[in-house]
Image (cartoon, rainbow, N blue to C red; front, side, top):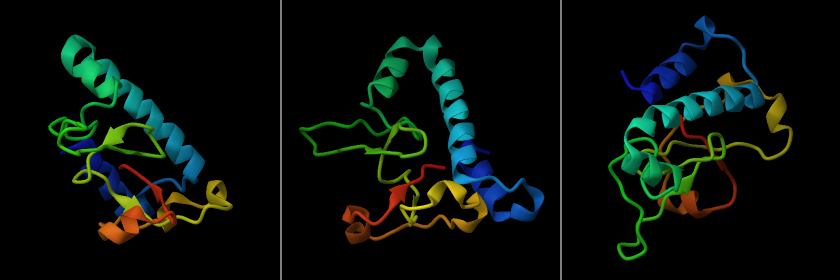
Length: 125
């Protein structure tokens, strides 16, 4: 089971998990992200592409390129570039975000028009 699927499963079964705030969740996700990047150190080319934001951090299949108009979306949680197929968008209020328990957020796939709006933060889980 992939890391994304495990985190989503934990979020769905919130009665079995700790009540984390958004700030705590971001910290945990950043630690996991750093560990994932460290695992890539054994493959110099792959590490360089992911670390420079040229390759999707999640699937590691989609290359971001100006010639093909393929752009990565920066996750506000882990600060890594991910492709549109891998990103999960969650509508979050911009004020008092740090005080909200993470269980109140529901991941969903959103429409293209909503993706382009400025009413959300992205959460790559």
